[in-house]
Amino acid sequence: MSSLKTIVTRSSGKRKIILPNYKELLSFEKPNKKLTKSIKNQAGRNAQGKITVRHHGGDSKRKYREIDFKRNKYDIVATVKTIEYDPNRTAFISLICYADGTKNYILAPQGIKVGDKVIASDLTDVKLGNAMRIKNIPDGTFVHNVELVPGQGGKMARSAGTQAQILGKDETGKYVIVKLSSGEMRKVPNDAFASIGSVSNQEHNITCVGKAGTNRHLGIKPTVRGSAMNPCDHPHGGGEGRQGVGRPGPLDPWGKRRMGVRTRNKHKPSTALIVRRRVK
Image (tube, rainbow, N blue to C red; front, side):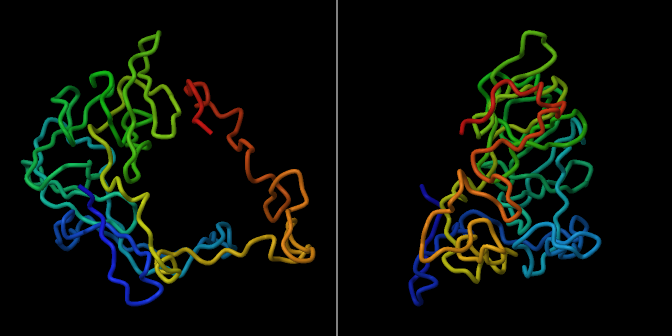
């Protein structure tokens, strides 16, 4: 059953809006004050005030929810209290309360419900929301919030609808091979933690904001096409009417190749842990 909704058309801007049906998916509770903090809008600028990330800025005020990516309260059962919207990420989050009274936010797995019990342990049941060492998870299981370095906190499979699949141990027995949503296969240390299930809000990729104003509220500023500029402003600029870029391939404003070129550092140490690159 789809959890998306369309808006009744009363203007051109709302004609194509497709959004999640939050009334069915979320529990409308105010964020936990002790687990939120204020963040300053950097608008894509560095400490010197220079723009280092283009097309950022002007978003709505928001508070950051501190997410427990480490899941390092071991062998203590926690109860899911809420499933909430997080303005800082595409996935939903859940407020869990441990038996000792501690509260934390975690990434909400797809299908989790208020009242469910979750636990983090070296070895536990393969149940939605539980976290355990990746060497103890059966082959073929879908996981998320996967650590790259044990104890560092989850780094992979954290956005809406993503997941990683356990394929089995490698020949040395020191690593577990996982397959990511992109198709990439890589090795993860045995002692790294991962959470069972895939990340919530799986239909995020087919939502449609409908109008430019919504993107401005999200902090996304308009982007001008290079072909619409003058030659002095962009390598694609100039010419009469619409025409191609006039180069072997697309370039960025500074003349570097943009599409079809690998940008990963060849000398990055973790490259040795990649079994197969992602599918193009």
